[in-house]
Each structure stands twice: as structure tokens, then as C-alpha cells.
Image 1 (cartoon, rainbow, N blue to C red):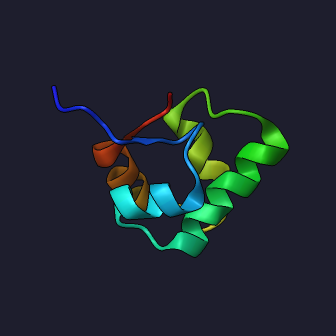
Image 2 (image 1 turned 90 degrees about the horizontal axis):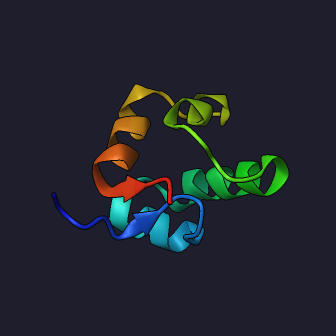
Image 3 (image 1 turned 90 degrees about the vertical axis):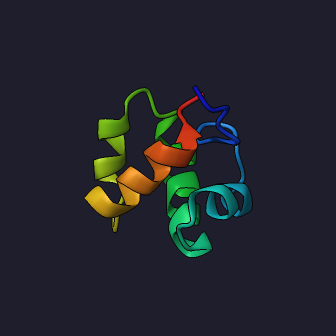
Length: 67
């Protein structure tokens, strides 16, 4: 299993963007949501972040973890 370099619940928007390939402004939406609602406990919670659908979610899952 490959080591994932991006940790959704700990990384900055810049790091999430760099390792997942999504735009930084979209990564910032994750950070804003995380700051308002607490750490993500499940990938399904990312569906609640505006602008995140299957394509972006799959990019995140392939390069990041929820740690």
C-alpha cells in the first residue's frame, strides 16, 4: 500500500491541492468546511462540501487519507 502524502484533516489547502491535483480554491473549501464542522470522519461527508462530486472525491481518495 502506498504512503499517502495528503491528510485531509491535517493538511493545508496548498498541500491538499499539491498532492491531489484539485485546485487550491477547491481545497480551501475543504478547509473551510473542516474548520466549521470539525474533522471529516468519513469520505461521504465531503459530498456536503460545495463543488465536490465524484471526480474530485476520487482524486482525493487516490492521493489523500482522512487522517
